[in-house]
Each structure stands twice: as structure tokens, then as C-alpha cells.
Image (cartoon, one colour):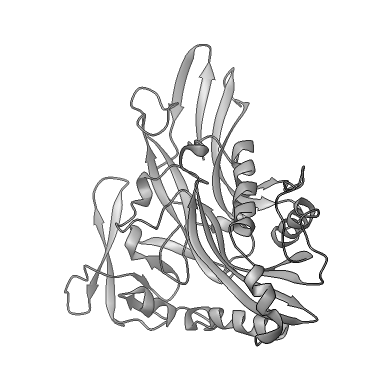
Length: 358
């Protein structure tokens, strides 16, 4: 976090030191919000099943993303208020799976058809981020300050009853809020974002047509819940997740990483000094050749993500997270005055299917 101190009409900026956080993003505070169906779906919305059940099969089931939050506290040494901008984890009070399930069954209670069928949703990806990985160019995470504007959704839908579930559809998309919910560094997961969150949830149900699946249900082969769970577990059977540690060496690609199979075993980690406080790590082979392109590397104790300034990565659930130290100026934060430069350590997570960060 960083601090801005108010005294009278003057604004003084005190920067976070240009140093990286050395503990997991899991240690961040929580931004918990309530997900409540305050109304029911319009009368014209009709669903050909009687209830909705959710299974959370994401690589990280503890949160929905990260968000920046601004608040003010009394300044400890000066007269006035101290502005704090921090990063927090987005969660739902009552738990993510339970809350979404209860929201759906409350919002659509007048839309269900009481035919004994259940819509089972398996969430493989559900993540909120300012990063848009749908574009074909390399994402510059350092310049990204918008949060909670892209909803990554990979959901699988089944219709079932009596423990027999028919695979119906798969949704794999990024839903973009765009200008619908303006986002800046200090806005947090605001009420407008929470309402848009509900809009996204509703869209993931109402955009699909389940009628043909209902007609075909009796004649098509089905799966049991045990079979569905067994299928979901396969996605975490990656060597890097199952092995006791990440092997020492240089990994040239994400594929090397998930296989826990470094391409270069013998290497030397060196430091280039740019100033009294700024240093940059670089790698050479045992024979002194520069290793210019690599995905990441392990020194046997910690793993560093080479794609973004050799940042330390931390395991969270069945994925990994890392920080980027971001420079804030008047161009991207309105309250940074007089050209002062402040810094914020912004966390990101790896998508273990694609290797991209969001």
C-alpha cells in the first residue's frame, strides 16, 4: 500500500519504497461482499429444470480475483487524514459456491419448472480481472490499473436427476464490463460492480437454451457425480502440482513448468546494478552464455517468473501467484500530485490451463 497525507489544503505524497513484497498474496486482506437475490427473475424467464447446483473445480477456490481499495484513516503524526490504497482479495460472504447457488435458487425460484431435473454447473474458471487476455498481443501488466472489469468464465453445464447427469454445454469466454462500470485504482469492488456481477451470473444462465437437452435427456448416455468429480480431478494431475517441489533449473516454456522439467539444469544467477537501490537479475549458462529467453527458473529454494521481471511466485491452491511492482504517476492516479512517483505491488495469478496471467 502507499500513503498520501492531507494537511489543510496541501497534499504531500509519501511513496512506498521501491521494493517488492516478500510474502504470498494470500496474506492480503479480504474484500467480502454479500450476494443476495433482492428480486426474482422477470416473469418471461422460464427454465426447464427445478434447481441449480454449483461445483467449484477452479485451480484456486478461495477467491474471485483482486481489487484495489481506497480508504482514509487518521494520520499518526500529522494533523489530517491519511489516504491508504491497498489490494484485497474478492470473496463472497458465506462462501463462493454456497452463495452463488443460493443466489440462483432464490432469483429463479419463480422461473423453475418442477420436473425433478437439476442444472449442475461445474466452474472451471471464474475470475475477475482488469487484464483482457482475449487480445492477441502481450499484456503489459505493469501499466494495468483497472480492476474487476473482465470476467473470465469457463463453465460446464449438466442436466440430471437421480445421480445421472447429461453433459449439455460448455461456456468459455471473457465477459467485458467495458464502460458499463467505470473502474479506477481507488474504486474497489463497488456497488455498481456487484450489480454487474449479478448481471454476469444471470447471463450465464439465460443466454443458453436448455430445451433440446431436456428432450434428449432420457436417450443420451449420462455420468454420475463420482465420474464428474473424477474427470475434474484430472486437471490438477500436473507434475508441478503433484511433485513435492519445483526442480532446480531454467524453464524455457510454460509446458516445461507444468511438467516440472527444466530445460537447463546448470545455470548461474547474476545481478546487474542500475542504481544504489535498483538491481536486476539475469541468467547465464554454466559456460557463461546469456540465457535471454526463458519462462522462469528455480534456484532450488524459490521460483521466479521470468516473463515479468523475475518475480517470486507463490503457490495458492492448485495455481501460483506473483506481484508486479507498479509505478503510479499523475497519468494513472488522479491523486498523485506534482509528478510524484509512488509504487503499488499488484498481485496476479496464473491460469494453469493457458499459462497466461490475469
